[in-house]
Amino acid sequence: MPDGILTFLETREMKPRLAILTVIALTALLIIVAFILATAAGAQGPTSDEVKRISDKLNCPLCQGRNLTDCPLPICEQMRQIIAQKLAAGESDEQIMQFFVAQYGEQVLNQPPLSGFNIVGWVVPFVGLAGGAAIVFYALRQWRSRRRLAVASGAVPRTVELPTEYLSRLEQELKEYK
Image 1: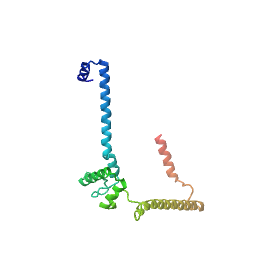
Image 2 (image 1 turned 90 degrees about the horizontal axis):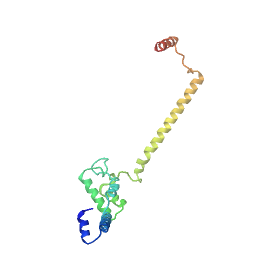
Image 3 (image 1 turned 120 degrees about the horizontal axis):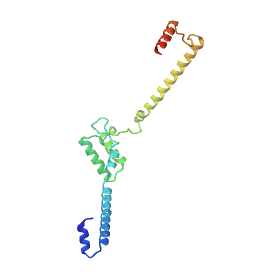
Image 4 (image 1 turned 135 degrees about the horizontal axis):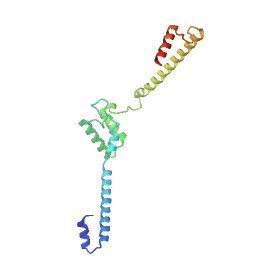
């Protein structure tokens, strides 16, 4: 504890134990007041997490494929400030997003809306993947059934016989290896 405060309190004819308790109480009071002030200051404006949450959903209007959070351009900084101002004014996330769509068009959104022609962009990859899997499955079934028919008809032998010269050479090399 600071000696100056204790000396001041002791000169006021307080006992040292009471002086220490007074200093602890004053310190606790100052901490509580600082916490209340910090909480009140945070309630007045939006936090950086709130601004980041919205700016992650938006693209830079100048850079291709770069979101607003990561882009260092001055226009993106201005857009982040506009987001903070609109959040402080009490606008919802959707209202802020619609403001930027009105300013820059739908290409400013990271995810295109699920309406109109944009549905094609959401559906085609899954349809293509399912179609590709179906084609591969069908081709493998056809290949397997042709192989069975060839083996059953005798066109393809079940086992392949190696010529005796290869077998004798293999046995010789195995003996040398041991």
